[in-house]
Image 1 (tube, helix red, strand yellow):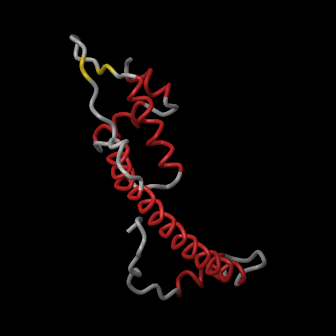
Image 2 (image 1 turned 30 degrees about the vertical axis):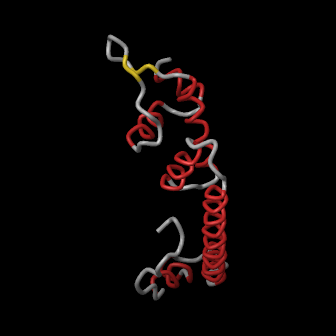
Length: 143
């Protein structure tokens, strides 16, 4: 199967296939005599799995760990559970950050409820006057 076919079968782009190969998430395919990549149904299956993990907002590191565990089908799944628990914690942290962000945006929006000149806009003035300080240390997988 050529790269375009595997991309189509996995519902992604050719660039995505190449990217995951470079990241080491998708094993390099064999090459034909003409040096074309030759993919198998296992590549499609793995690509779909990776895409499903990305839909769950997993990082490449988390996906790599999960794929390593998947390659040990007879092993205990405790490590999979632990990985998912950690990911849930990261998601909860991100939700809290997004709720805080929504509050900040709502407060900014409250500052300007009517049309006026941009230089008198309460939103623009509020953004300019924000005291952001150094970036807070993040305790999520997003860094």
